Length: 427
Image 1: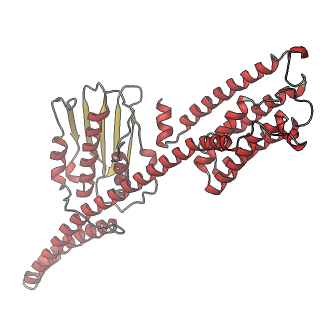
Image 2: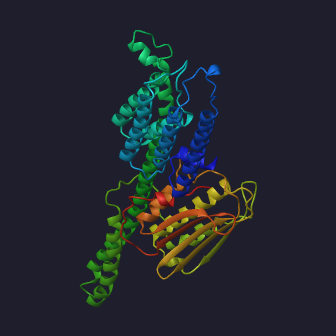
């Protein structure tokens, strides 16, 4: 069920590919074995047999199903490109049509040769994958080809040849065939819609986090520039009388200007909204200590451990650390079943600040931010913008879940954040 939830959410990983490939092989393999058993079990006594006379042709649908199954399974991994997926569907349909054409001549008996179950399942799988990955034009073409494959049953039953001789095709129903193809397309189109919806949520979370960071940086820059202006105004009054004081104050103004310029670079491309004020360095420890709790009906106790000089942490970085800690504790309380403790640890050393929020509970099957907030995506985006990283996942060799972040303690240039999907975790 966990793998199915990840497929529906559009998540992709090598482990999930393995699960899907093994599942597809198992299903198609079982269908192929059943078809082979039916072919081997056909009676040799023609007096009691109303089908086609026994021959090698009885095994052509089985061979076709085996080849189509291999083609379909090869297209399952998410690394397969849309072009290759379309070619795989084209090849699978071609095998099925070629088999139908090969079975068209010759005696058919009363009911001819049926489509093998493995052929139908393989066709279903490749059409679903095309609906999930390919362009609308490719989807339309493969859908038409799938309808042709299903209609080719009339070649195997002999009804098409009978119609050419003036007979009537009894079992051909275009409406039923179109409905079957729509059913093949439906899972892929649904997963495609979910993936597009998720991408939209992720983009919105990133945009909101960038704007939130811009608000924080705006206040930092405003504070620093105000200090520069005040110092410059003071120098105008005392500089003429005391030049030495001016020389002493200029390095401080230069340092403040450098910090303001670096922070200003982070504002490029962002708009300011809201009134949120970033934490001062002296407030970071207090913000983290405020997370401590003895435990109540809302969750297990929260322990906080701090080490290093948190005063070294820049205001915007401190704000990010505090938010990540709050998000981590909130999600641990929400998703960590049977947890007995949540531990928050922050450390400053060698110009870097590390944060870890961990619990000892059992993961629930929800993702951070699942339900619209996409909190972990926002945390990872903020960390990336500040020149750091934020990851989450199960604790190795133990029970529980942890959120880990590492950022530069001081001011850093704005970083690109084109991809933070690797930081998304699943509880």
